[in-house]
Amino acid sequence: MKNKFIISGGGTGGHIFPAISIANALKKRLPDADILFVGAIGRMEMERVPAAGYPIEGLPVSGFDRKHLHRNVKVLWNLMRSLVLARRIVSRFKPDVAIGVGGYASAPTLRAATGLKVPTLIQEQNSYAGVTNKLLAEKASCICVAYEGMNRFFPENKIVLTGNPVRQDLFLVEPRTAEAYQFFGFDPNKKTLLVVGGSLGARTLNQSIIAKLDELTKSDIQVIWQTGKFYIESARKAAEPFTSPNLLVTDFVSRMDLAYSIADLVISRAGASSISELCLLAKPVILVPSPNVAEDHQTQNALALVRNEAAVMIKDVDANEQLVIRALSLIKDDISLKKLSINILKMAEKDSADRIADEVIKLIVP
Image (tube, rainbow, N blue to C red):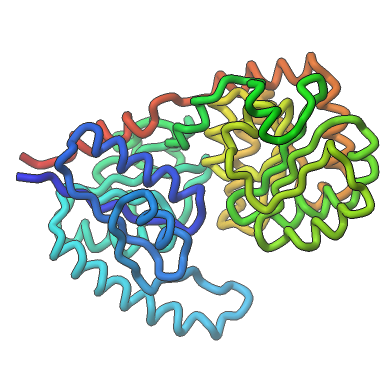
């Protein structure tokens, strides 16, 4: 009999990439397995998951609107509908195990699964657990985490330290490869700064770069500035007076493996998936945590590295004034770059997707 698995969650690349990595690891172990994704209608996973070769069903679930409370009547109605639909999906598909990776859809899906006596596994990516996962943890069979000390939030006997799965293609390119410099049209003899705000871009990072474009373009370092699709027009307009072969402005980096290959320093938000990639790649990084996330978990993610001298953190409110100045100082300091690289690599958790797949397979009831 074929094994069947449901994987639920999404919303951002930080949830979707790990989910697909777990699916790939399960297929590697069990090639005949059927894997069904459950996502939120209108979110990124509804496109990215089919593109990766997996079927997905959508729920009409969304997050609560903390600024406009009256709009939450519809949110609550859609949550109730999603609970009903999730139960139907689980009943029909009959998975051996249901896996939640975070995001709006994981809550109704895993609640439906536990109600139907299906073993569940939660993958908590952040160093500060979200409300949904804390609620789901009581009935979860296993909780895979990326940071030490998560027994603050979850029952210790259910926790397995696995790390976060990341995009495996990032590790196929050697550091400072000639192909990467040619791809971006950059000089191997100059330092390269990579600015990346996640799959959707980050307003604060873009505004901070715009505010100091003069200093950046005069500094003789090379900059790959990934703006995200919402900010590309304003970024290009701001960069027009500073036309330079050392400045590449793009909404999306199609070859992030090549960008990481030549990056001497990275500026990034502090999403869990991004941090896991940076740890495994041993990249010196300045983290600017987003304040617009639940429980301010990006700050907690960043502090977990800062406490180990594995990253530099600048608060979102300070970024406009401090970010570029700090980056220009740090990228010229080879001793500090080396220290950050060594320390961040110590925090890397390898083979995370395979380790999570092992835990999933253990939950299959004979």
